[in-house]
Length: 65
Ligand code: FES
Image (cartoon, rainbow, N blue to C red; front, side, top):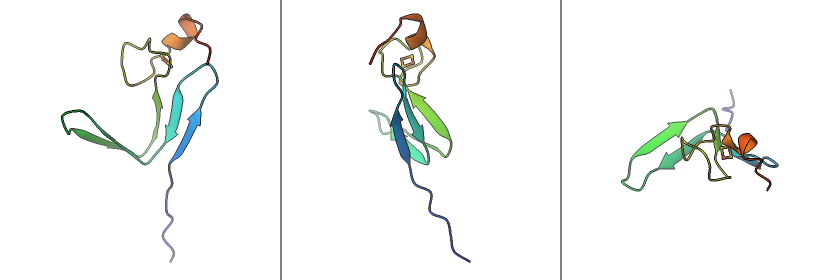
């Protein structure tokens, strides 16, 4: 039986966050790591209160990009 290899897909959403369909491992500045198998959304507008993740603020500030 063949093992399915999951690949990571990165999509820049117009006027919104970066969508990363995992698996993805993030490493912080102090070496802390977190691995997610699911989809995550990273803030691209700079306005999120939950950085590096998107919290929807891009809609409130009418981010374009
Ligand atoms: S991209 Fe969504 S809060 Fe910044």
